[in-house]
Amino acid sequence: MNSFKLFPSELPEIDKNDIIWTFNVTAEKLVTVNNIEANYPFIWTSGIYDIEVTHNTVSILSIEYDYNLENGLLTLSYMPESDGPTMTFIPK
Image 1: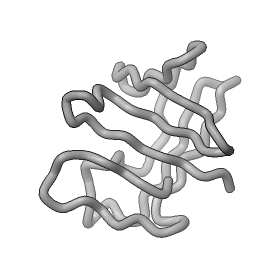
Image 2 (image 1 turned 135 degrees about the horizontal axis):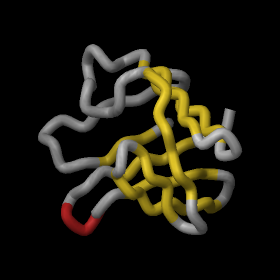
Image 3 (image 1 turned 90 degrees about the horizontal axis):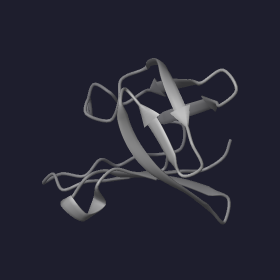
């Protein structure tokens, strides 16, 4: 992950490898490693999560995120029109 946008007063600064999400669509699992969760616990803690992927959404912990793949970047968003989070990922 290289960015996290939300409405809080202080947005997190994320450097390469601070947060790593590995999607296994076949196994329907997401493995997260959050090396900065002590500072930003609201950006998913490290762990293994069940996911469900459809043609335009990814469900994680029953939250349905819209996703977009463009120019080699994956973007997940949840209700951005209501200041929900938007996360952008770069490939390894």
